[in-house]
Image 1 (cartoon, rainbow, N blue to C red):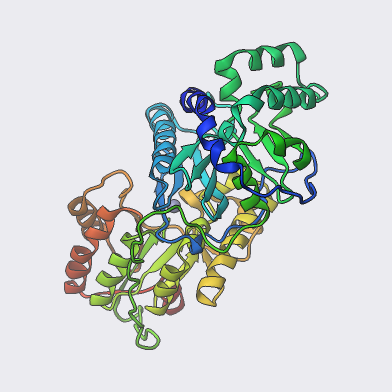
Image 2: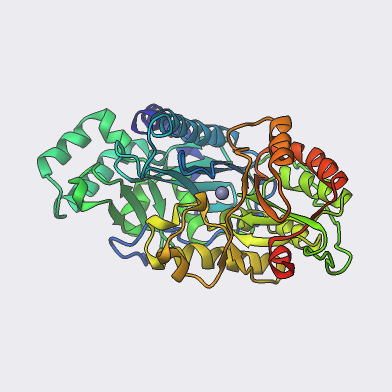
Length: 474
Ligand code: ZN
């Protein structure tokens, strides 16, 4: 990502004068700096993504241990140039991963790109993408922030938060803070920042704390020895405010005192309709007496695929289980509510689809608890089932949660074969009574396969039930 962020960063620094003109009438920011140096790079305020009108989460993933990846980034109406930048970044990383690790042995490797909203307020949108790459060629965790200036209608890279004339002052302050840190070689640091290419590329993660301080995060190995990990420098609000561009000042203010909604000036698009199917009572199917099958749909909810799927399922009165990812539940709680209301089961598929066997018990618990809380908030009910991403499970994972794990009997590999006819054929030819079938409702092609699956298997006497129902009646 270094080479990718470089050009826009430099272009932006050259064109900041026009952006600054908007900032002159803005009131000064006065809140105290509440940041601690070295604080973890988390959002200053929690953004509720379900309040962002027209938001779509663009997700891609495999469920396959031989090529384990999961990526996501948000698509916010009005911020198309920023979405395009994230898309390009994510697709480039995924293509590299798939042509490398997946083409050979992917043993012990996986790629995860997740997103978090930093600011979604007024005319400012800020997003951080975090890449966790366990492939041997990578340095591990890396982060970038992306900014959109709704007032100017422009995508901003992190250096765009700072006025062009203040860049030297910012760099001097960063160098000053870094030079005292363990693992930083002062001479190498001077070299990094004196070179315009590397100097711009390491400044790819900047945001504000709740107190208005500027937080700059450097990936592992960028400014110090890799063994020292990532470095975070927090520059106090009073130091940094005079250096900010007009956009930077607005981004700082919207971080400290978010307004109620985001308005990037996009034309109003009516929210897509959420299906309102309602289940008619409890399912009395007895799987001891009739042929049952449990279709499961992972990695959603997704717009518009999940809505389309709910309509197909309602037509056949089929009940299924959704293994949802928390970051998408938070964005689309209305869809998860619609799934539950239609009589489907909602399971937990982690917050952002990591390989749980690589995490500590605390991290595993956090991934699952955060997602269960989002599901409870959406539906009023806490899930009882979870599906570990990639089916990767061990005793550490089992003991870190009270949720019951669910794997699968039939893998459609629908993430690989984006062909409705092939997906339908796989399910129809492989399905046996009481099987659990793995599908993904983030893929339009998988959703398009569902009517054929429901039609054919219904004709063969199958009943479509949830995983908990299957387990309870067997
Ligand atoms: Zn998955």
